Image 1 (cartoon, rainbow, N blue to C red):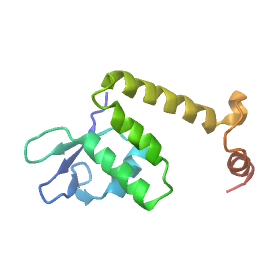
Image 2: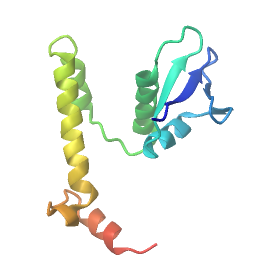
Image 3: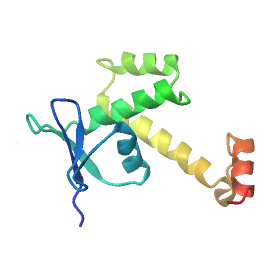
Length: 129
């Protein structure tokens, strides 16, 4: 069983990858996620696990600088869920829904599901390297 890669966040807001012995950026954190590398981010000052906070920063950075995925209405509804809905139930529902969506759009020709993005899927599946 492998152990999670440890990223330390220093008070100066810098992230340090203990496995590669170098400072990294949010773009590097995004790459770890895309590569499905198991990691944990700990606050160097008090040892707290702040992985969720860093992942939220990656999402925020993507929303500001890339193609936005989360609409204002969606974000407002998420905010409304705090205090009104059991946190575990909404989190599980969102994880399940996103997981199903991603499974359906990953290989639409393999599982017989029609992609909600037919032009993108067609171009991706038919174009060569």
